[in-house]
Length: 568
Image (tube, rainbow, N blue to C red; front, side, top):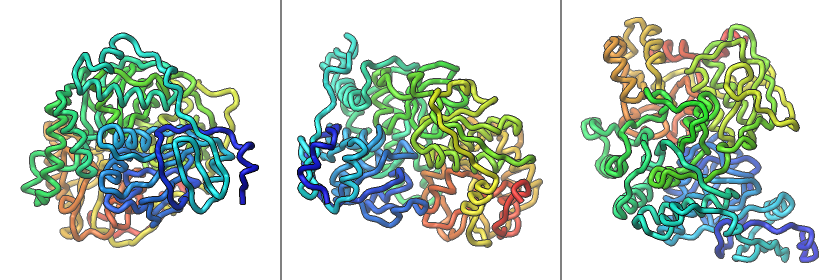
């Protein structure tokens, strides 16, 4: 047990958000996404793949190296704070933005304080080993041990005249509030300046609960209106059809109001989690302010655009001001690969290899940008890279990855990068883990992230006019632009003939019952992202499968757990 004499050996920590708290310590060796990983109503860990699955976080001092996964975790934390079920405090040992931003908004706009600290490794380990912890603005105390903490340096952030005018309220209360939140985030990130962005993408339009709506309507009430072209992520209802689909007004009404609020603030109603599929995708080197984890990773990695992984709520602040903290993946130093991951990919690997590789690469590089090697010969398509980036974002906190011979900045490797291998055996084990589950299938889930036109065509061709089994649902989620193109070229007619429902606006990480069929118990998907989040979000068994597996399940209602031929 540590004693007061040990205090002098522990370096000072950083008090990101100062306050007073105490509670039992819940320490995690592995990062956690609050969206899809924590129940917003109870504070319980629902990520079935996480070692702390089933643990309640409400009232606890929660430690993890950093968070991972969805940018919407900030909305879940705000929801927990508003309901009185949030952790008593959050302690990290690495930089962390998503939960920190949720805590900043909870304190800044709603007076709900959740202290957030970042501790050096030795101090973090000492607190993690304790039973309880008490936090003050000056220290963390455990078992007689006092660890000093101090706030970030306020004068490290240089604001230009326009920034200062917004912060002082010269441009109205909405911009003042947005700049206050931006400045607080920039300081905790260690940014010395803000940077212009050309466009934004809003992820906070997903309805995690009443807190998201309260935030949006509060900002709208202050006169908020976006300054840069701003697209919107998938929302939580089919905006035009939710009432006919039988969605409860208690959920559908607020979810639609949330979307409408962002539209009134000037955002484009694109309602897609794959904004890079839109006609005006960002260019290489373009500074953008995007949220949504898969979109951020794809933009940085595949397009070569530049954006940090912005949490929900910060996305609106960026859209309103046209400014973002000059930190993270905006800077070369944070785009360099810090780990080389050699993939032993067998010949003949199919499209299903890419979500698997992304998922395992995230585990191999949970806290740093990796360079993936050994994949160029497989000649991935844009859809393959989409699946890779989305799955990587579920298991890693990094804002991007590189693929040797494929992505535009793959030469950006740190001289001190270490090396790991994902072997063929590990690929097989990973597939077995994600593919495991019941043989009988109720639902085939395609489109997480949103399906492309090419993916819709491939599914239609695979079904070849054959009708799904009546008791099996086949649902594709896709953006409005893709659905319009699929209507124009006849793909939608083919899918409808096979009994496939193609739904706009929603994505699998926001879909809910009854649009998600109420009687469903087992799901198969081609998405590594949804294979990870699906069990916690839906309460169902969710298996990762090949497209052929999904088609077989649609036609027969069953498909055994099995490896792809290239892994056998």
